[in-house]
Length: 193
Image 1 (spheres, rainbow, N blue to C red):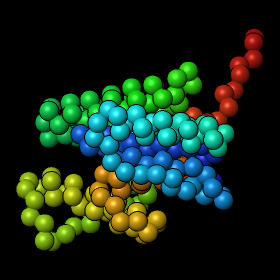
Image 2 (image 1 turned 30 degrees about the vertical axis):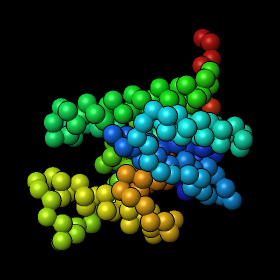
Image 3 (image 1 turned 180 degrees about the horizontal axis):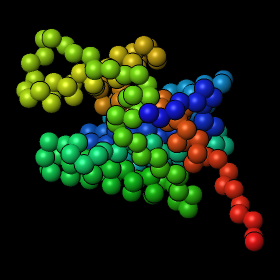
């Protein structure tokens, strides 16, 4: 399991829950903790570009580095090849939008498995007995998404839809993850022999 740090990263974090309609969240340090600056949904190229531009601008205005945190998926995480291809295509569009907005100063990208950030935040599936989704996999997916919605309500007092909630949770993970801290750490120089 990933280790969460008590001190938040000194960086703007753009978190992306890639999909046909993607959730996104942007946070930055403020008064010793990470504040949520923006979150929402994107469905097309122009919206992704607007979010990427806003993230780059937020980092420049605050004189902080930008780190992109995005979900990664193990093989077999999707019910079929079409679903996997759709999510990979969405991530590709995000990567292009970020590259376009950042220009010469490309931000580091930290990819994390969904199970990793959920476990680190202590999320557990929340089953709704009234949901009769088929198959069982869909019911499980809905229970996990519901847990993210409830976590955002508890932490930020916001009522948001599931993909946005997962992006906000992903940003929270990124702000306190050792993985993000590692990409921000100064690189050690090797001494010549």
